[in-house]
Length: 180
Image (tube, rainbow, N blue to C red; front, side, top):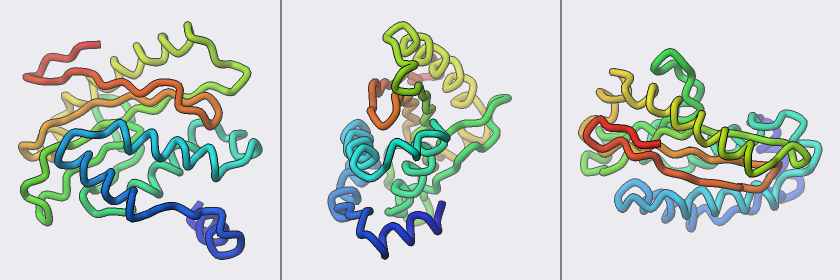
């Protein structure tokens, strides 16, 4: 995927992303809990920069795209498919506290995907419920608690249908309780 991104950027200028804007959005996510603008921005970039053929791999295309672009800044150590709570978290944005000791928020992100033809509101509700269950298990993992290092952990689910972000929801994990 790295080679794909590099060649696309060099050869066709396909990846014409406003890195300055993305950096500002991620900073706001890290310090001000403004996570939704980051994922709306990235969803728009997914739409602009991918082709229908890319979606043969479904969720992995979205996950890789997010992984690549969330690594633009160094506020977080991005962990992908790491084992947590007897499952594998799609993305964990671990605060880079040694560089940013005042960072306020850490994020667990669960992605759900439906093909363009396989999407329905009913299926999306089921995916959101399942994402909430998964995030609850991941959030209670001792490594997540330790690595979050005093920041507030935000649990987010993102539902994509093809290149379109259909839902972005936060689950309450304050005080150890988890609301789906």
